[in-house]
Length: 275
Image (cartoon, rainbow, N blue to C red; front, side):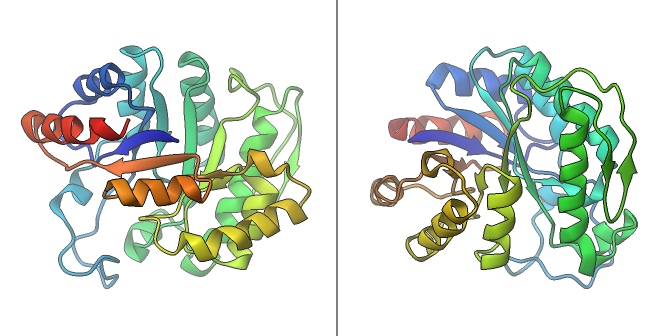
């Protein structure tokens, strides 16, 4: 079972370059970065974890720029988003960003995508909240058309693209794609249809959820061994990680503090015993 990490990198934290080098040196499998373009000061949407929204949400670095820096100073470290708010992006631009990062890193990129929780942030991007999930799936399908080996048209509910030359291509045809979201039959069916696996936050309740996901996956004709299950933003303990391994989890993403070098490197030293 691979051990990766996630962190809210900001203008006040350890830098992407320093963190990436330290992760690779210690043998961690990857670095996942979250995304928020902005946080409207006046909002009605509550913070999902409760209480005040942590300071780092409004200071988050652009994940693709930060991951490009990480790619340039490492050779083996996996590079991932956790998550890309796909409905808030132009899909043609996003397809180019992803393909370029994956190409230049030698196929090390994983697209972790999700549909968001902050209504006001999404609204500023012109996203209608009730249709954001269908919009996101539509944009993923459109990006896959742009990544196809030959010029491929796409006509979706929300957008279309004509057959186009779109290079570079992702190193392996398309990046590994993991989808975040609460367990549910509708989500699991769409993962089985369009993605490579599930990125559940925290990993609670996996013993009940994984069988339902596997049933949807195999019902869609997907090979059982291809399913990726990656608990995200996990606070680790030996017993918890053993439990995940017993469930067939492929990779676990551990939550690092959003802090300066000494705090983050101290956490890495603590987490290194799980690698």
